Amino acid sequence: MTSAAFAFNVSLAVAADMTAKDFVAEAKKNIATISVAEGKTLFDKGGVIFLDVREPKEYKSGHIPGAINVPRGLLEFNIGKKMPDKNAQAVVYCKSGGRSSLGTDTLVKMGYKNLKSMDGGWKAWTKAGYPVE
Image 1: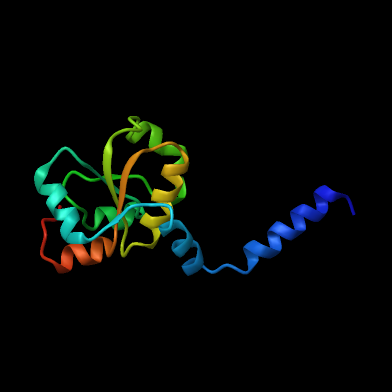
Image 2: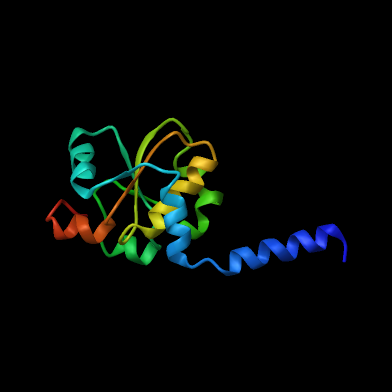
């Protein structure tokens, strides 16, 4: 076996042992996370992009007013069109916080600088009675 093949097999073994929760926990080590109340404060202040990384069907069923939708699965491919300014302040959210953590981590790796993942996501936002569209 070549060293390249060996290295490939080793990295697959490590990745195979991680669960979705593990990936989210790992992502949270690298990102800023805010509560839904802090998200609402930023929303009220204005000048902050709300980035919804849920699927289009979820977004269409309700979202934070003015939020832009870039599904987590297409984030790396479409974010440049929807949010070209890598210095823009943005709050990333999903249904409950997992996809937004992963998405925020990805965007940080892509050079985005002023991002926060909203813990609790859409569920917490609606439960708090905050505005929806």
